[in-house]
Length: 476
Ligand SMILES: Cc1cc2nc3c(=O)[nH]c(=O)nc-3n(C[C@H](O)[C@H](O)[C@H](O)COP(=O)(O)OP(=O)(O)OC[C@H]3O[C@@H](n4cnc5c(N)ncnc54)[C@H](O)[C@@H]3O)c2cc1C
Image (tube, rainbow, N blue to C red; front, top):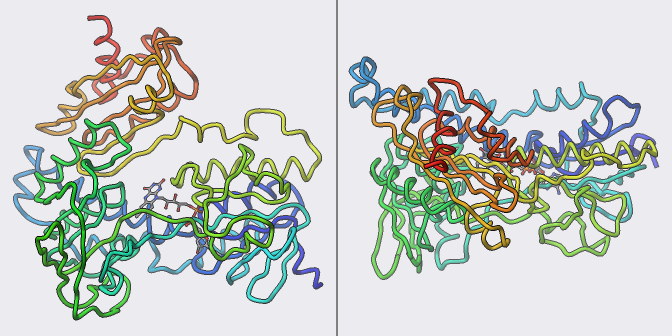
């Protein structure tokens, strides 16, 4: 074997998680690492998910704020967004799908990049399109997830958009049907509405954002309807027909009109966005070569190690623990630290070697017209877990929020464990609440008592004053 095919650490998948795992595993040492990537170094997040979606959402938020701000609203009036400028700014974030800057970063961090499809072929070995790489210490699987497209009659033949098309759109369809009611569906609806599309959401269940607090789901549904969305709940998509379907490329309208049969009625649109969940990218990565099941989320312990295989780690979306970039990168830091410690013969003593935050301490922000920022358990999750729950809830109406924009509306809720008087969950809904969630995360992770929180005084006039209102609501 060529020595250039031997590395201390092999990472399959060069998304945000693979990059961080590789970098932490070799930092400050003479260890070597390679990232195997069959598409773009930077992964889903950089080119197809977080960055393009948030760059498309921000102009709509700014316009909303401007329309509710005397002195500015007169300037913007009813003017729509400048679609071309919004898409050009999106391209500046995705570098027009050119990953050379990320490859440069990897190389500058001492990480090699091998282009191709990686498959585990045995213990500590990875096949990349016929070339065999060998790891001295560890192999990290960081292959992420891909979009699921349901097997509804006619749907796949209609060549619907998936999230990659919606985030990388080059044309705004006049009428869009979005299939799904989760985070990707709600965020896509938000930017498509702000870019001028007519949006119909086809939701199988009875609520948007089914994992959020019910009040959050309702506020988001109202905000989307207020912006013109039609939302069909309990909607059964029976079939799709699109005689003129055409593969015109990512983010371009895929042919002629599509006709969707939903509960016996026909809906005609110019494009369909399927946002019906994600599946692990684990069906063709060689799991069966080492006794694991192909195509499933790869189970791990809190060191992100696959049980029974002390050289194999599964990190990020592919392990199904928390499908979010920040949580994947957190897991990657743990993975890299564990690999480094084991390679050096150091014990795994200390909190940094276990991804404990994956358990009931996960923060998330959904960037809908009213943002939904949450951490930890919802009321239902806490009750199901046997927590003796106290709920504190208030509408967000403080000096900071009234300054933010006219007609500010939002709601906040804390889930308290009465037994320990600590916070186990928090949800904030409203314009610009994303930045509130980190304080809640610190309180949940730090198990801060509400008695102590009383002394964490929010600055005036900020939206954070809602913390004071929440604590005051308990004294009344
Ligand atoms: C539309 C959308 C918006 C999102 N917005 C946010 C957000 O705002 N905030 C947030 O925290 N999360 C967001 N997410 C989730 C986020 O994108 C993922 O959690 C994150 O990308 C996971 O990182 P990862 O490195 O595990 O996987 P990925 O980013 O999917 O990277 C995996 C990499 O592995 C490569 N790969 C796969 N198989 C192989 C193989 N066999 N050989 C070689 N290479 C392979 C892929 O090409 C890819 O580059 C969003 C997701 C979507 C779909």
